[in-house]
Image (cartoon, rainbow, N blue to C red):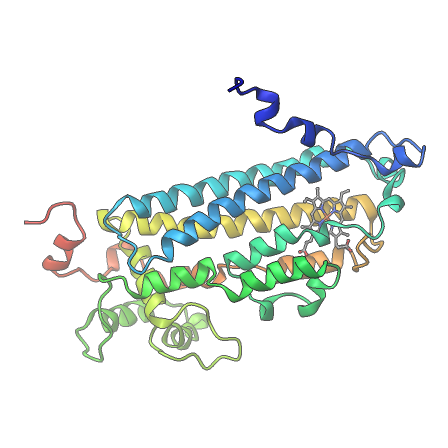
Length: 337
Ligand code: HEM
């Protein structure tokens, strides 16, 4: 067998011959179109890697019994952290795009119409895999209006499969360590409720109703049902509060990764939106949307893990945390005797 060669292994013949500027075809050479193509291709390659990581994480989380006491959870956290690092790079890549001026872009912009990043099915499928529901999308059907049928099918398939957020919900629900719900005044959650109530300013008293709705209700009455159940929300809050205990460190890292993913995605959306504003002002996008206004509305609405971020409204100071029973402290520690 012939030795493997770098060029063949990476299929460079295909990759390096995949930049075909429209401006060259039309003999109206526009220097920056090469950058424009390469940057989009790079994004799509990183999207592919993000799918690879998120699929692996979902496969592990989807096991009937993810073993929290094994390397599996550590691997999940490790891969999600990798996603965060990739997303950070994607945010920074906008710096390179912004070396193109609006006039440089105008040299070839009209030749692209109606192509647009809006047709990136990998991006939309990623949102769906993470947990963005159709009902929570800005403009509902509009987001698939420019996609090819086969790409819509791919996204719809992901929307109807268990999203990462749903898998996290199931995992949290079966967390064995969170204290049980009880009406007993001396029970953990009743003591917690009292302590939380005491920490609120007058203007925040409405938070108690929200707390009861989120943590103590088995069925949400809100028109837009929460994706995290009450049991899952209690487990997540418990993890956030007692994350210092060894057994809760990885679960805490996992929740933290999800917030970081949302934050990086949101940073990307805002940087992209500002770049669009700078590049085309208030003109409509090549994909036909209202441009900046569409992107702003999607950025505001498309937080995926907002229910986890919202849990941080219900924290209390560490020194006021209810002490845990000795037996529970033992279970959360390294040593079992
Ligand atoms: C000169 C640079 C760019 C401009 C002027 C621009 C403009 C726009 C506009 C106006 C939209 C809204 C849809 C439309 O009407 O077309 C859009 C959406 C989008 N663009 Fe860009 N874009 C640029 C670069 C990029 C890059 C480098 C990426 C990387 C993949 C990208 C990915 C996307 C995605 C994923 C959407 C859909 C966002 C959503 O639906 O929330 N764009 N872009």
